[in-house]
Image 1 (tube, one colour):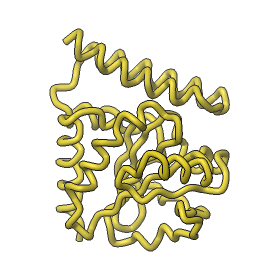
Image 2 (cartoon, rainbow, N blue to C red):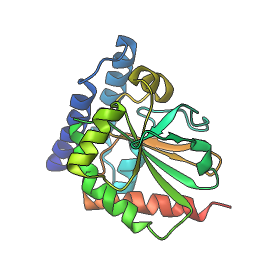
Image 3 (cartoon, rainbow, N blue to C red):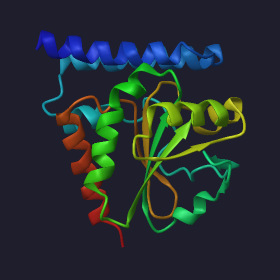
Image 4 (cartoon, rainbow, N blue to C red):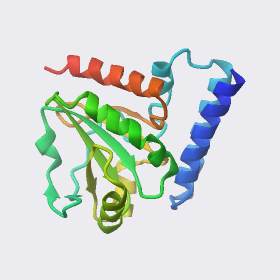
Length: 211
C-alpha cells in the first residue's frame, strides 16, 4: 500500500511541476492546492480498490463543470487551418489537454497511441489533443517527436486557453457527449496498462449509451 501511495504522489507531483511552468492567478493556485490536499488525504483514508475507481476519483479536480457546453473558440490545426469543433457533433469526443515540455504529458504519449489504436475502427469516437503551446512550438514538437494519435489543435492565445477551459494541471482529460457537452473530466496521466484499460472500459461504456 505504501508503494502504491508513493506512485500516486509522484504522479501528482509531476502534474504540479507541469502546473508550475506557467502562471495562473493566485486564487486558482490556492484552489488547486486545496483540491490536491483533500484528494491525497482521502486517498490515505480510503485507497481506491481499482484503477477505474482511481480515474473516477480524479474527476473534477480541474476543468469545466459537467454539463457545460464545450467552448467555441478559434481552433487551428497544426497545418494552420481553421477547425470547427461543432463538426464533431454526433460523436463521443475525447479531449487531451497538454503542452510542450509537460513531463506528465510525455509520460502518457505511448498509451494515448494505444488508446486511439483500440478505437481505430469506431467512427463514433474522436480524439482531440488541445495544446496550450502556440501553433509554431506545437508543430515543431510534433515534427521532431511524432504525434500521439490525437488530432492536435491550438488556440490563439494561452490566456484564452486558461480562461476557457480552467485546466490547472496537465495532462488533463475531458470527454464530451455527442452534442458537445462535458460529461467527464479528470486529471491523471494514463501512466500504465491498468489505467489505460480502465479508461478504455469507461469509453466503451459511454459509447454504448450513444443514441
